[in-house]
Image (tube, rainbow, N blue to C red):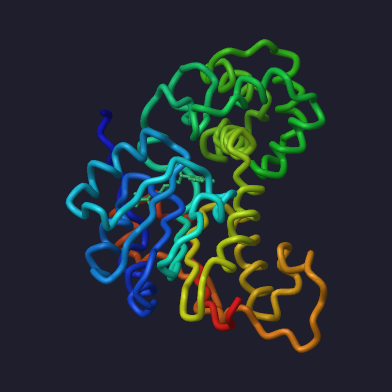
Length: 312
Ligand SMILES: C[S@@+](CC[C@H](N)C(=O)[O-])C[C@H]1O[C@@H](n2cnc3c(N)ncnc32)[C@H](O)[C@@H]1O
C-alpha cells in the first residue's frame, strides 16, 4: 500500500470541540488516513467511531493506522452525500459528525490520481475510482458554456470563457500535461506571471465537478443535523469559499429555526418552531500561526461548529 501521510488540520480545536459531546458514535465523514479519527478515539474512550471515505486507498490506510482501536472503529466506503444510508439504523446515539472537506495530501501527491497540475498523467481526478465520471469526460464531452460556467464558479477563474474556448478547440485532451499547456496558453501573459500556477483554478474546478463536491456537501449537511440528538455536534472544515459559505448559511438556518435549511424547508411550516442547533462558532475558527508554519495546506481552512439543541 502507498504511504498515506496527511497532517490532521486544526487537530487541537477539533478534539476540544468534541470533548463535551455525550458518549456514543462519532461519524467521521472524511476519514482520509484517519488522523483526526485516531486523536478522537484516544481523547474519547467512551465513544466509537464510524469512518466514511469515498476513496478506497484512504480507507485502507486508515484501517491500518487505526488497527489498535479494534472494534471501536468501523469503516464504510461511501460518500457523505448519502450520510443517513451510510450510517444506517443503530442503537447507539450519533453524538458527532465531522467533515474535513477537499482532497488529502496523498491524493494530491500521488501522480497517478491526476489531481495535480504538477505531473503529466491521464485525466482522472476521481476520489472514488468506482464512478464513471472522470476529468477526461468533463474536459472532452462538456459543452463550452458548461465548461466556462463551472471553471468560473468552482475555480473563480477570471478567464474562464477563454480557458473553456481553448479546451474545446484543443480536443481531444488525454493528459493533465496537455490540459496544463492549453490552460496556460489561454491565460494572458501578465496574469500568468502573478497569479500562482495558471492551471490551479481550472484543475480545482474540474476536480469539484468530477466529485460533485458542492451538491454532496449540501446533502451531507442537511442529513447530518437530523442524525444527532441533543448535545450532539457537527464540525466542518472547509477550504473553498463556496463550501464555507454553504456551511455558514446552513448552520445559521439551523440555529434560526431550520426553515431555510433545504431538508426542513420541504416539510410543512410549524408555528413556533424551535431552533435545531446553537452556533458554537459565530465566526469561523482559523489555524494558529504555528500550525500555518508547520502545515501550509491548512492555509485556507475555516472551521465551523454547531450543537444540536432540540429533539428530532
Ligand atoms: C482532507 S482529507 C481528510 C483527512 C482526515 N481528516 C485525516 O486527518 O486524515 C478529505 C478526505 O475526504 C474524502 N472525501 C471528500 N469528499 C467526500 C465525500 N463526499 N464523501 C466521502 N469522503 C469524501 C476524500 O477522499 C479524502 O480522503
